[in-house]
Image 1 (cartoon, one colour):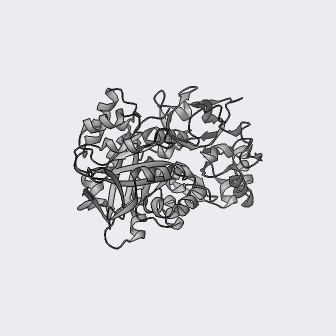
Image 2 (cartoon, rainbow over the protein chains, first blue to last red):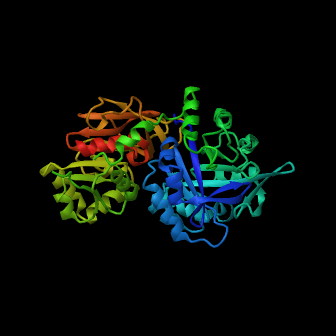
Image 3 (cartoon, chains in turn brown, red):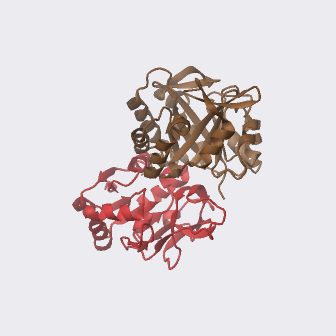
Length: 267
Length: 208
């Protein structure tokens, strides 16, 4: 059986990486800064997967984003999913060519499922991650597109129903309410996931400390947890959390991070 | 003497960027090559690949790369590592897209996971899964027991009649997940997406 996964999500806005709180962005630094000050390549050795999302609020420079994915994939030897603003097969193809293994789709899943099918036909169902941004409004689980700017007609249960019948490999379920708060994942979102949901579920939004990971990973409905919080888990934060979870018998892969320095330029 | 250049075969089927990046990280000299003559002159070959067996073989044949690989490996003793579809293409044949012959460097064949075998498990098999090694030498030197690697595939190579070193993985049924038979190596998983475990294996291959 597969192990559970810890995923790091990098939020990108026009050349910079961002910290997000309830989808409001704050600039942290560019790629060089991230590599230098945050030793990102080291962090990447203690996670199972990397997600890179272009959440640019202004005008998008796609080529610049492709370069960023390309550059990150040079030093991250894990599956990489990339997305944000994908509207066409051609955009998906470019990301997959530049080192991404999967594309993250949000708008297309809700607004244009035909293109989702086209991408799946060419690259396989496993190469598609459907990302759904959710907010609890009164009693209702509402869903949003365009970086949380536009509310959709369908609520979360309805969208999850649609996803079941689409050629999609994974679900990235993100809480707008908890995003960047560090108050813990919104576990209630999982109540909307139908029994025997056919694809893995990644829970995102709100992780602030070890307990949040352990709480979510204990839940049988969760296949992976994601955090986009650059500060909460920076330095050795993620590595320590991971080791603690493994010591508590959570079913995670044991990566041998100590080997990293011996491997670089060893040939 | 400087280490030989690693030739990554470019036949339009695969994520060559990530494989190149992993070898560069290890400090190897790599070259992406599509010219059959240059391939038959190479001493270290990588055959990556994503996609279906049938279209993979068609691409190799159209460009005459199939013959140059066989020439380099069987006549000139070049070592080769097939990754994912590349690993399968080195085998005898596959049932994907109708029975299709492979390069035949290895006698093993490729079949789809059957629903009986994978009872209730999802196909494609996607994610990290653990390996069981026949011995931890050569391609598998220095790896921990049950080391995890990243898989994404619906067809798999049967374990039958394998001689040499090999590793199996279980997904409902046991299948051949890596092999080292003389100068011919293959991995069903993506070493370039398997953290330090994958880098160790690529380093081992380069040093074989």
